View 1 (tube, rainbow, N blue to C red):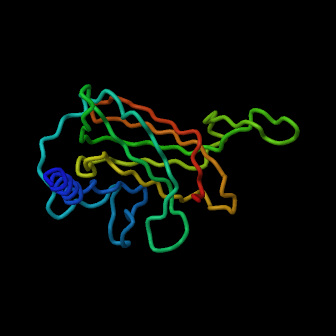
View 2: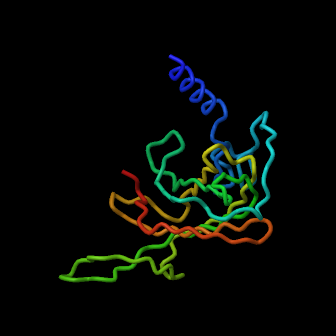
Length: 192
């Protein structure tokens, strides 16, 4: 019985504390047109927690997963979403300010055996660029699981090809100039 109560209390705490405000790439932050800026407005009563400066970041976490998502009321995919999780040497998530530079590229066919593409690679050349974004990340955008980043499609247009892939390259720069890189070479751009 004590274990069940402990589990319920833990789940309640996670739900109440939330996962931070997502960072949107568009100027309206997924809200009405009168909102401006690069990140979602602060929540009404943000928790004042002790933060660790960007200089302690050792990695951007163990995994990087990108998914095409819909975050408004229509049925169409709006863009790409992922979590950014800066970690220190003790594997703790660090809430830090910084700049995210994201670039989405078309993969290039590197094996065209039998007239069909058998293998694709991400060469990330400027000629293969689909779209790019620059975002400011604030400490308020972090929750327990990191910061949720939403890159809204502006240049890319959804197609009927459910298997259309792209390559996403991320560069995160802290305010003290440290640079960290992530890359996902198999992002399904149209969702499923």
